[in-house]
Image 1: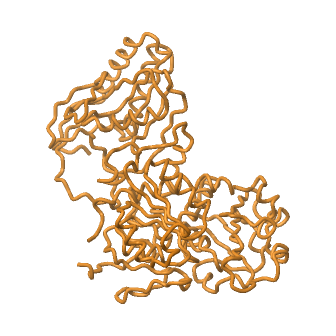
Image 2: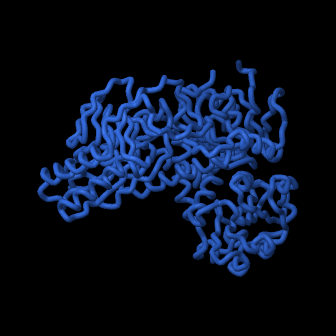
Image 3: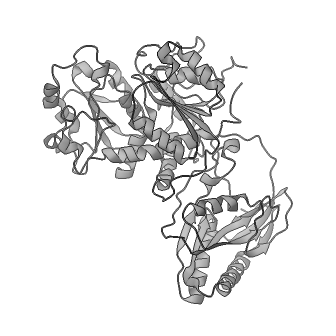
Length: 199
Length: 376
């Protein structure tokens, strides 16, 4: 059920159209897609990168290699908030040396997740270049990071959260802006996995 | 508020948020040298009852995302959810060890002291590699190089260690309960790397990880543990873990090496190895610890091998897909035949490999609460 106080900024059709546009932009910018690889950041960057992979294959007739990156080991806040999620595997079974990597995630917020992802990628090799594709850019950057491909810019306040729901993870495609709940005392106890809020 | 105690304290692990003086116990038998005295206000409850109480508190289908403990002092007191969390996390860390760059910055800036008061090669190296792969700064203390050899008490050593402000202390000690003692006097996270005859939790976790990787599950498996049951901390931790995870455990040793309380802890006890091995999914051999035996528990090593040594012929009584484990170091020709130890069913070296991943997982999961979770 969608929170009645939430505001829908993208529906399934808009998400699909945005990804189609991003796929075309990627192909346009890279005439030789043979050097391209896709890497999705867990969790929702993975289905997004899979969709981009399918769309690029439809345009160019070539399926790009797809990797999955878990950035938890590269977070810079483990000692203050603790490991917040069960680690999942990073699966990059192809060399990224000298390749052009398209990194995909759902929301670009402070930039810290992307910084962690860049650190993680560098441990797998030395790519020729790394570009960033995000479905939503909500602003409030804390690091000098920007996206190369943006599905939608969504200006937000810090009291708001951007919630991306995708069929593969959540059963439906939707981007919502919801009011941030009252901040509670940080505690490391068993908690139910929340529908992911934007980072 | 240090005297307040709203719920029963756990026996073997310091709960996150508990006061530094939280009670720690000595496990299934009296402490070997310096027993940790129980707090007068802590009820003396049977281990099984404690485990049940803990399990009942967390009856839910919610995924567990973080350990609720500040320390890893033993397996006793961990729920199946917590064990599963550690094993799942270890699987992710196993992937790190396959990379070209086998290092992640997770514990950058953290200091881990490896405080080993007993000889150890495997466990100590495994912890050290795990720490280095997580980018922690490590400092090694051993008995010969420490002031303990000059007569300093464990408490004074603990205070001095604490003054250096380490974030974690990995301790191996010949006295059961020494890690619990440190946990009461240090603010660092304490990890038990083996205490006396009591527990060796990371060994049990890496054994469980290896079994789960090979068999896909722990529940319902028939596990035969054969060897020096009397002096083995590995046995106790494995027994607690395997029972918590729903495995069927049968233990086997000569009567002189079988403590009487084992059946109370849920293990089936037999003195006949053929009976123990019958239909086993997993055979776990334990080392004969001659250094801990005051008198001869059996006449000769040759006789022990004849009666209790694992040979290929005996292993055939187990299931065809049996895996054979040993925590090491092995006494070849005493508890295990070389042909079995090096044979196709042996996963002994995989246990060593998995040990690094499991210890990385434990360090990672305990690292989170060091700034915010210290009571007092």
